[in-house]
Length: 320
Image (cartoon, rainbow, N blue to C red; front, side, top):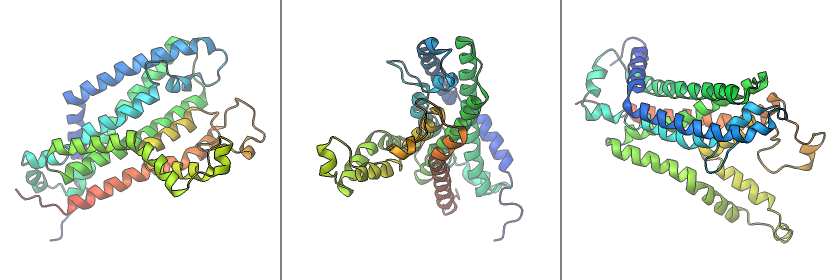
């Protein structure tokens, strides 16, 4: 049967309804409060380390994101760890909950198509994560002004805003994965466990596997081993394999943007140091060029996972 109207009819209704549910959900409120508390503790530790360098560092605001103080990790370390958990918490029951409550057929009986329903749930989850990240960004800026008394520069603001977009793309990868699993598995508990298992695999296991596989693909050169140097081919393969992990891509983007002195995300060769001043930061455009492949990888990962969700969802039976 030919359906009438736009494929995205009802998209705005779905987005507003899901966004309202997310923002008023006790589950999300508790997670956000936990993130804010841990973030404040991390920022306090960072400011204590930065007080002595207030007049020396031209990128003091960016250091608030990256500096850590034992036993707490840096603000970026906390975000990289907690963002997937929040995204999975938003998406693991996005679709299967409608089946379990037997409301899917009722929703689709309205002038709302599957396209609008799936895209609306994804956009609402992404908007919720965007609001959370924006609030955390404002907390960092405000706390930095209050604790250090140094206003941020224009380039610092631009770098931190671009980082905000990268963090949102990183959220999109895990949110799309959680929604995909909520379509594949009718049990919300199964979808959540599988999503957390995938996250733990890419966070803890894949870096070790990447190193092992790289040594199998390109065995270390004996000449380099005798001199105590890593083999270039092995290191290159290890980086290629490690970048299949969204965590690795996010970490490299953060390193390039929030540490302006970073000149390469891999081994640094002599020609890269020609004309460089020790400790001098790169211009914003150069840092973007370094992080561009990783940024594209995160956006592409979100799109691929959403397309996979769309294909599977379109083939499912929704009748009660």
